[in-house]
Length: 87
Picture: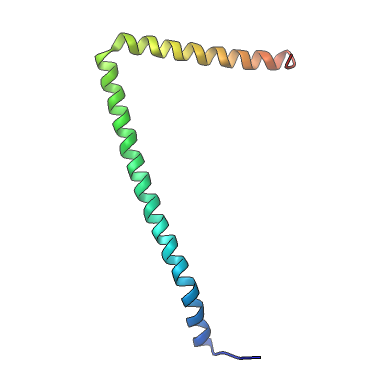
């Protein structure tokens, strides 16, 4: 059985662990960039939606009413279907 010193063991461990830590740090940087890009895209989308509503207010009201009615129908059907026992 080979006995190695504490310093050699520490160095061997560092050789194996350091690349993993570097990869983790790189992945964290990529994730932070993706979050920042997503935030910018969401802000752009919100600004564009606000501009569309300002340009076409009647169409925005009609679209919102239609979407609300569709969601209301889906919710009503879902809960109504469950009350009847799924028949």
